[in-house]
Image 1 (cartoon, rainbow, N blue to C red):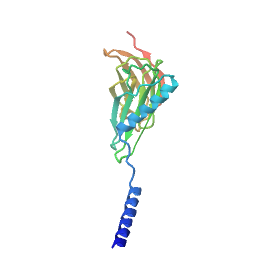
Image 2: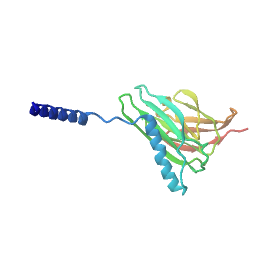
Image 3: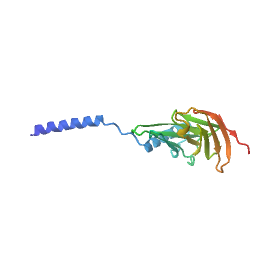
Length: 199
């Protein structure tokens, strides 16, 4: 009886091991991916700028959902952190309906007078350099939309990027609602200097 029990136990162990091996590994959630990105970039920034520790706090800066259900969310460095650094970062997360996930980001000093659009063929992330703008009005593909700017970055709506190869017009707007200036004919990825509005 003990012999048969041992054989059954061994068979069960082999079956369990086989099921465990074939089970797909669980993907980290969006919160975990975002936190990991900003933790890793903080280490790189601390080394680059020769400081003991760089801030790891971040803010949501926009979200878009594609027709297939893929969720894109933009996250940016929190400018209210008391640690003063030159480099500010963004991370664009992608969560697919089937459980697949990924993302990419970048860091740099938000200076200069250029407006930049970076990203891939699906979505574009904008940055505004040294301009103190609260929102950006985007015109192209037969439509116009005004979206908020968070810590110098903004997420360009899918309307202007997916299956579209058309130059965009971007107008920066300050907190009072006044126009700061406009960039015309900008196709992502790319950058151009803002032409200030006349006052």
